[in-house]
Amino acid sequence: KHTHRAAMATRWISCILILAALYGGTASGKVYQKCPLARALDTLQISSRSFISNWVCLINAESGADTSKKTVINGEWSSYGIFQISSKTWCREGRKGGHCNMQCDDFLNDDLADDVECAKIIFNRGGGFAAWKGWVNKCKQKSLPDLAACWN
Image 1: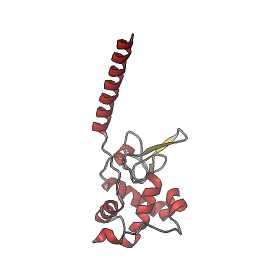
Image 2 (image 1 turned 90 degrees about the vertical axis):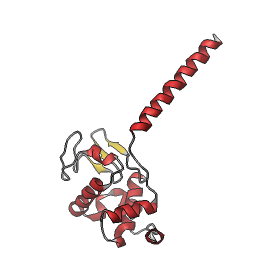
Image 3 (image 1 turned 60 degrees about the horizontal axis):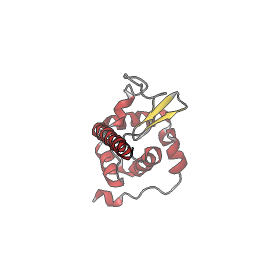
């Protein structure tokens, strides 16, 4: 009986390790640190440097700077990626669409170009930074990340 339990435990551990390897192998997300994120946003010309600290704060508030973050909201729609872009308005699940004319899953990888393109549309059509609740709650009229050392 004891050997049977040990064999079962070994099988479960093997199964879990295989699943973890498979999942880990397919995940293409990334969690950004402050300076690499600021430099990436600057390279992608999200805005002038004077506003990038607002973008970094917003991203940390919305997603913890995790490009693979997906949040299901009320079981009706989801928010995707580093900017938590909503399938309700800005993108569509399984096909291109929404105001950004993009597929939501495209925001879950570590290529920020499409995310930034859509974030600019949201910024311009949605009322600036106030389009993101995370920015309103955690960044508006608050101390923003100091990015001075990021540009050296």
